[in-house]
Each structure stands twice: as C-alpha cells, then as structure tokens.
Image (cartoon, rainbow over all chains, first blue to last red; front, side):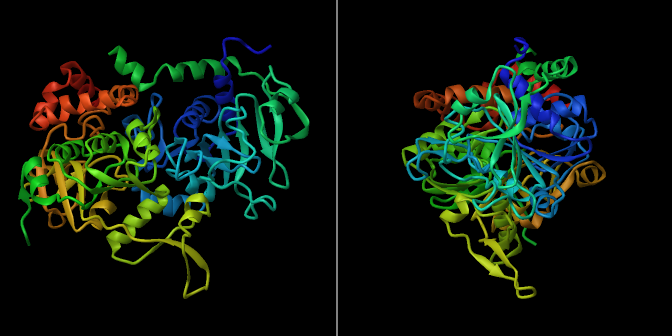
Length: 253
Length: 291
C-alpha cells in the first residue's frame, strides 16, 4: 500500500517533478505543472530554469505562484521580456527544452484538449482555450503532459485538438512532441509508433485497473512496474511548497 | 507635436470610446486597466469588440455589463483558480461571438498591427483552431518555404494602465510587459491611466522603463489603484483573494449583477470604488508589494 498521507495528486506531482533534469529550460503551464516544476527546483534541480509564458525568464519564486504572472515570479527573476520576444525568439527557435502542460482530455497520440467539451459551436462545457499551449506543444524540444486519469480525461478521441500530439502515421519526424504523460494512476511514454505506453504504476493500481480508466486498448511496456513512492525529502518539500500559496498567506494576514 | 491631454478616466472614455469600436484593454496578469473597463460599463457603451489575450475578470465584468458583442482572445481562464463563469455562460448560450487564437498568434497579430505589415509568420503546428479557420500559408520569396501566417490586429483604441507618466505624458512601467507595447503601438489611439505623475528627471534616473513616448498617447489619467484587483509591481500586489472569491460569486448571474451594482454603477469613479474596498485588504496588498 502507498503512504496514506500522500494523496494521489501529490504523488502525481512528485512523479512529474522527477522527469525534469538539472539546468533544463522549462516553460511552465498553470496548475499542476507549476507545482511540479517548483517542486523539482526545490528537490533535485535547483538550477532548473523556470520560464513562464507571461514573459518571465529564470524565475526563482520564494513561494508558490497562483498565476503565471504573479509578482512573486517577477521579483527574483533574471528578466521579464515581452511575450512576443519569448514566443518568437526563444520558443519558436528551439531554446525551450521542456514544455509542461495540463489539459482536460488526452488521446493515445498525446493530442491534448483544453478548449471545449462537446462541439465547438455548441459547447457542453467551454474551457479556457489554448493560451500558449498549442505553441509550446509545437516548439518545445519535448513535452510533458499532466492530467488526472479516468474515462472522461482519457477518451478514445479528444473533442478538440488544442495542442497537437504525434501524427497518426508515427512519431513526430523532428523528434519533438509528447514524451511523457503523468497521471494519478501511472506514468506513460510514447513508443516508436507514437502511441502512449504505460511505463510505471501507482502502488495501488494494476495494468487491469488502469486499463479500465482508459478509453482505448493500452500499450504496456514489458518492464512496467510500480513507481518508487515519494521520498521524505520530496514529501516534505511538497507540503512546504503548498503551504505557501498566496491565497493562504493573504487570508491569514 | 500634439500635446497629451490630461483627462479623468471618465472624460477620456466619454471623448474617445464609441459604440461598435474594436478595443484592446492590455496588460497580461499585470497592469490590467480595470478603472477604464468599469468606466466603459458605467457609460453604457454597446456593441464593442473586446480583444485581450486573457479576458480575465475584466472582460467578465464588461460582458456582465453588456458592453460587448464579440470577444477576441487566446486564454479565457482565471489563472490558478479555474474558468471564467460569465464568459462561459455567454459562450455556451451564444450571447457573445468569439474569435479564438493561441497566445503566439495573438501577439503576432498585434506585432503585424504595430509594424504596419499585412501578415506575420507563426510556426505553430496545425491544430483544430487553425484548421477551423483554414490558416493560410505564404511561400518565402527567398527559399520557397511555406510559413503559416496570421493577419494584423489593429484596434481602434488600446487602453492600458501603467506605473507612471512624466509631465509630458511619456509612459513608464516596471515588471511584466506581456503584450502591452505591441497592443498600444497597433492602435491608432492609446488611452493610458497611471498610478502617479512624476518628474521626468526622477523617472529617467529610476528603474522604470519607457513603455510609450508621449506622441503615441492621446490622453493620460492619473488613477491610483487603477489596476486593482490585478497588480502594479512594487506599488500593490495581486489581490488573489478577489480572484478566488470571484470564481464562486460569478457562477450566479444575480451575484454578478449585485457586484456590478455595488462596485461599478453604485460608485462615481475609481476613488469611490477604492473607498468601498476593505481598508485592511488594501494595506495588505501595499505591504506585500514592498517585500
């Protein structure tokens, strides 16, 4: 059994943080990716370069930012630059190592939907839309996707392709595109044909239980195994990070 | 050179904003011109096309105030909190038309508008947004390479909030610029509100940078707290509690109407709005900005 003190969401954040390597330049999306990137910087990759689409280069936030344009991100950053400069001169030209995105739906090619549930013209649920996600998915050297896993989030087909994944005929020819998907049930990579493939499992899951939460027949790596649970250091750093959200500080002020 | 006009926010909106215009209220998370937005609601402008990369709470409130027919945008979320309930209702019921882009496409459109060129190349891969509008490609006359292009965005008026103006109306800011400069330079007319007016010699010796020269600015309004609940780096912090509370409140239309009644229609101007806010809240935001 896994540590009951760690929620599934927390384990997921720890697993995602582990995928980031020291000194990489990471373009960080809002929500869980933001939490995971900030955790990695506090645990094993203090020289991780956090870049935010609002135009922040090398953020060193003292506490967890709520939004991607928070003052806490700006204060100790190397620089703030116009969005146009960030998107055209850094992202489009290949200077971003890792794009780190969340979304509402993902399919087996790593196509990500963060635009709409239901038809575009008559939405059942209108979501936020691309922001920089489609641009980041197009141009980052590799992509990490993060979202909870159930039949709603892992449908056979996404309702809308906001951020393109691997093409139907195989992996992206430029070697870029989705590299990892992290969920609350498991960790996935992509095989040579560009199909999402189960690599690691949450300690409470089996291949069969994860298959039930997936809207297509899962590809499974021959060496699939349970992931190593979060260490005390990871756990402690995550709890400390979460306790510093700006809302908590403001509400208690 | 035409001199900048020093107007109140109310005078500037009355003089320059007309029904049916295309407006860009600039500022990415930072320096969002809420004072201008509220004044546009108070003056019952109608039929506007509102452009912003991130509609944010500002366009929530302006949609609730029924000033717009159409929103041009790239990310309609409440960052770190969730979605925009008023925007969602308006889109799901078809009450407002939308035109949607990616962030890069949006800032590239502004760059084309600011540079006065007919298109701007953007190498983002095809997705369902670009497929829906059959995004055109242009062949490079030099290499023959095909590049996707987006059209210019040139608003009738761009409105923005900044840290300071000098006596001549040159505009200075610090921190995140987002898409502010391109949005301003893409517009024929720019209306600016500022926290303070300060002597040019102090501003030029300090850490603020020039956002716009006075000759690109039609009017300047001195409007302290003009960006609340967003923030002005070094002056006051982002009111994240406000952003969180809006999420719950805005799910009910009647709660939004009550909020507009109290904080927009029920006050004459920004100074009165500020007096309605809890005093402790403002003090906290000011202190947090100085850390």
